[in-house]
Length: 139
Image 1: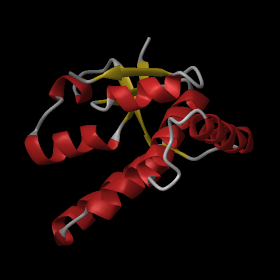
Image 2: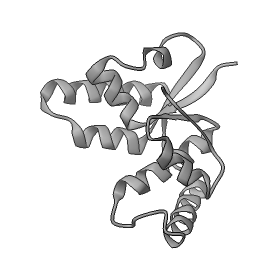
Image 3: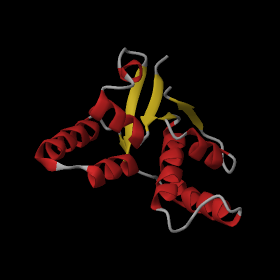
């Protein structure tokens, strides 16, 4: 059975800028999904026309495949609840949007039964203390 995966932004950056993580993107053993916070973070960091054109193609491909994931209503509520729980346990800085994006990435992957592939394992471990979801280091 193919593994459903969601790549964190740092994985795409490693792939695009340095050709890393080829073992994660090659082969037929994975079905890749894109979650909207990752696409937004890539857009925020885009520099120049070539990167913009690449992101237009990348986003369009995920849309055409039906693999650009947005939260359903129950996930949207759950994102808020998890953020609240993390904030009041001292594990989320409400002024840092990256923390919120990581919660969204985790729960959108959970929504579709996918595993988050990341290099920021500590961030996702912290979120995993508040709610169960699958993640792993790309190593």
